[in-house]
Amino acid sequence: MAAMAALFLIVGIVYYVLLSKVLVHEVDEALEKYEKQVHKYVSKNDSLPIFKNFEEVQVAYHVTDRYREKEISQAVIYNHDDRKAETFRQIVFSQRVNGVWYEVTVAKPLEGTKLLTRTLVYSTLVILLLMIGISVLLNRLILKRLWNPFYVSMNEMKGFKLGNQKEHVLPQTDIEEFAMMNDILSQAINGAKDEYRILKEFTENASHEIQTPLAIIRSKLDLIIQDESLSEGQSESLKSAFNAVSRLSKLNQSLLLLAKIENQQFTLVELINLKDKVEEKLRQFNEFWAGNHIRINVDLNSAGIMANPELIDILLNNLLSNAGRHNTEGGEIWINLTAGKLEIANTAKEESLDTKRLFGRFYKESQHSKSNGLGLSIVKQICDHSGLSVKYVFADQQHIFTFEWTV
Image 1 (cartoon, rainbow, N blue to C red):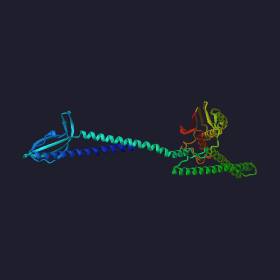
Image 2: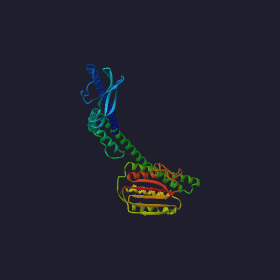
Image 3: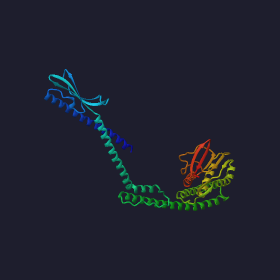
């Protein structure tokens, strides 16, 4: 729209300048006709014509001693009748009468020309503006109707999400190009849904199937470790294998949980008393924290949240477990709860976490960490699923996680 306005302004200025030049050229041609009439009158009558013979034209005669070349120019002349200075276009030429040279000046006012120019320009621009406005309005109405199937299809695609049970129906249209586009989009949607379903089933089945042999291996290793006939080296090797299997089992459970969250399998949503939930978790973790001489600072106020109870339970478990495991000996944990906001902070063993990779899968603060690197990724997935925003900052040698939601 701005480009059209600028173009319209430029065209108007150019049109005004060209029209002015054309009309001035017409005035110049009229002045040259007056010159010819003067020459013709003098040749017939051997005298200069009388001023009253020329309408709207001012004529002046001055005796001169020499011939002067014809010259057309613009001049400002005072109009005694209107008592104001006006712009004239004048021609100055020489005329010999009875052996005497006269300098003849014929001046024609440009006020009428300027008025005509402005009138023509304004009229033309108004007509063009009306035509453009009507054209734009008609185009909008027509194009809006023509493109309506396209925008409906795009809105459907915006709402498309793998795992969403909503049926996406693209509009029927008689426009061949849009009908072809809808066919291609429908094929892509159905193909993506089929592939997603297959991958989902594979992930769930694989995770469940892996859990059984892992449990058997852990059980067998546990029995073998208790055998007193084992040498110290064999016992250490078996313990190492047992720990590795335990980590693998936890990793599998975490990946299965992530898959379930992404697949929207936690559909139950209810109002949760978050204060009671946090107090319950404090009682569960109290012995673990006391064993590590970690002091707890709690400020809990009534707060509720609409979410899945199982996911909120997992969220608090991960956060409070991390606050203890990544704390210093004799460190502190701060838990503050208000309506719509939960803040959990703990003294830090190390420096700030990498905020760009913090919630990514398999992120670890150190390569030698025993964590599988999925805890905070699960936290982020739960927040996204439950409508919470999560923010991490590192200040005063503390890891601080803040969660906010709409009350």
